[in-house]
Length: 67
Image 1 (tube, rainbow, N blue to C red):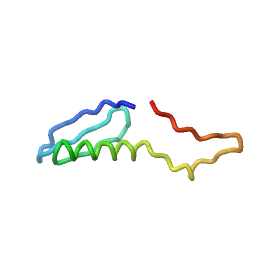
Image 2: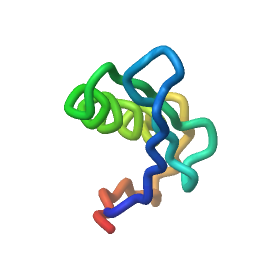
Image 3: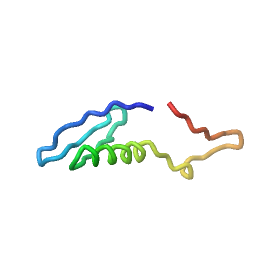
Image 4: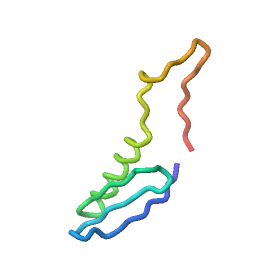
């Protein structure tokens, strides 16, 4: 999956970034390397689902989809 990310310089130094395709998904980092690491973690957290909170019937299946 490829996502567009908007990177902004932070007023206090470093960077902050947002992922427009995922509402509320944003993070920051002191360096570009730290920002990229934090972006991966933020996107994973924003897209994660706790399957224990979802009711499934006997005919339902869970699939992993790579886009």
